[in-house]
Amino acid sequence: MVKPKKSGTPVERLPRRLKCFVAMAFGRAETDRLYDRAIVPTPDAVNLRAVRVDRVEHNDDIDDRIIQELNECCLAIADLTFTRPSVYFEAGYAQRVVPVIYTCRKDHFDRGAPDTARVHFDLQMRNIIEWSQPDDPLFRPRLEKRLNHVLRPILKEEQRIAHVVFQEAEFRRLSINEQRRNMKQVLQEELARAQFKKFEIPGTENGYFTPMEQNLRGIVRYGVRQRGSALTLVEGIVPEGGALKLLLGAAHYETVLQEKWFAANKGKRDLSFSRDIIVCTLEKVSRQSVLRSFANFTFDSERECFVGVPIFAWRYTGRLDSLLPISIHILDGIRSLEELRLNIRNRLAGIAPQKGCRRYYRPWRGAYHPG
Image (cartoon, rainbow, N blue to C red):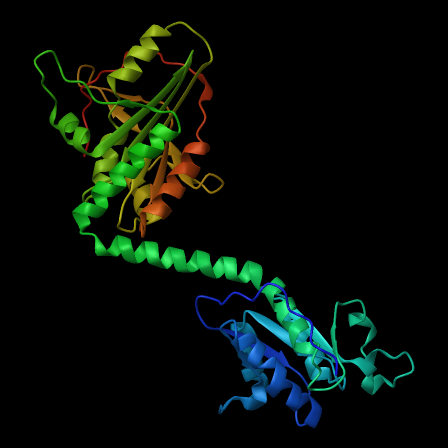
């Protein structure tokens, strides 16, 4: 008697039970025994449920049911024994989106075998697992080994999904205030990680702040990166309600830092400057509502942000002047701190100063907000 070979590293169990669609000839003693004794137990050991459509109780059209099961499976096993056309179709359909493990009885590889008992040309180059009889001692270890190989990326993705679900559940357990407090902390950490220096709105000599400044100081996290004649300013906002109103206020407010930087570089050509506002909110914010609030802004689908120039009202002149362009990034519907951290990191990585900035007027710190 031939002893079965060891299958090597044991197949790791999936965190949740998934489907493995099995396509094979029905009503044949050999293939039925192979299914019951080798194919069903092997996926079951790794938390996969083998599904053969003739063993499923249903009241559907058989073709519709097959397509449904194929769409729901994470991988498929196709046994080519007896050269059933339906097996070839199901394997081809599954192979579009999921891996397919091919098996076949050994005699189907003989060149002189008839077409009804031979692997067709299209699949002869596949790495097909052979079996000689339903109780073949070598078949199940080989199937285990192949499953172990095929399941690695699937297992990795399932572990990622399980981790995301856990992180979202942990985030939901926090109160709204705790969620926002932690979001502000993540925002500050990511600004520091991207080498943005912390900046706060300064008051007057008497410690006075305008109502707008007082509001922004508690909500907005400013980060600045200055290198020579290049200035990059990022404003991170975690609103406590009324995200668009707060965003309007932040966009129409120009800090003293910008005023001093432009004054220091007065007369220089081709200054490099960028200003990005990142709004992190638990609520969903529709794209149309942002565009209605910022009528002269457009949505940049490549960068996934709103770009435009806000209108700035000057009290002492009584006329409207334009500020420099602003990019507005909306990170809404936050479900976990890890998701927020990754999104902020990706947005900060894509920020770069724009060349050719020129300023013809002196900005005023106490800006009037039209809202």
